[in-house]
Amino acid sequence: MTPEPVRTDELPAAFELLFRRSDLGEQGGRVANALDLVRRRELDPEGLFVLRGRGRLAGAVLCLALPGAAGLVWPPQCVPGSRSLAGEDALLRRGADWLRGRGVKVAQALLSPDEARFAAALPRNRFPHVTQLCFLRYDLRALTGSSSPLTRSGPPIPLDYRPYDPANPAVFHQTLQRTYEGTLDCPELNGVRGVEDVIAGHRGQGRFDPARWLLALTEGEPIGVLLLTATAGSGDWETSYVGVVPEARRRGFGRELMHQALAEARAAGAETLTLSVDA
Image 1: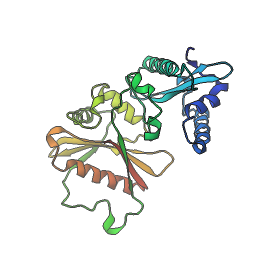
Image 2: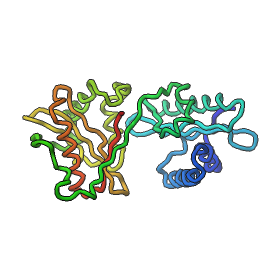
Image 3: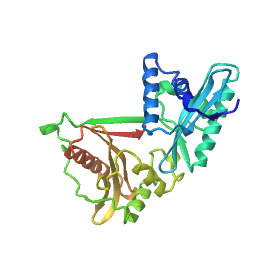
Image 4: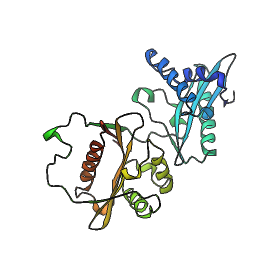
């Protein structure tokens, strides 16, 4: 069996295969949501490949090419049988070739612990487990009085902030790149993509607003960057990235940047501020 692009009439069955490990109460909702995303052209089915058996689909994998030379992969799922492992491997190879042909430099799968149990094909095919991500959420709606996000254990550290200027981005890009030096935040990905790719990836998330990307300076010297993103259609903001250059670490600047993130989000009427971080 050779992986082939999915046909439009096969989409429901392909998504049912992909989500077959989900709880019965969730599978239908996931399939319906995926089909709705395809109809709204928010999910590109060109990266959906299937194996065809006798009168039915025998396997499927979903790959998405994202801005910034990045990609996402939903682990392949095959109908149980003697050739299911070979089918999974063939699907992943086909998906990886498709992503590579679209300029993707790094592809990843973001899975819950339950989903990861059914993704053994990934490490078999050069998708090593890199880390566990922690998703954190700050509820800004309940903050009043002394529980303001600006409550501190010590005095604020004065910083100057300059918004991102797409017409003159050199200092911002240089500072962003320097924050990766010696980082513990997914260091396995360092150097895989250039700073221009990284910027393009961040710009492709949510609603890009250069006023919410801040270069932080002290005494005229850049010490870090803060990237905030408003999630379309919700009251959520995300701390897409926060980083401090090596020589400015361990001096409270990271904490100061997070206070700024909370203040910016609350002033804009955001309900929550979220972030994900390498455990």
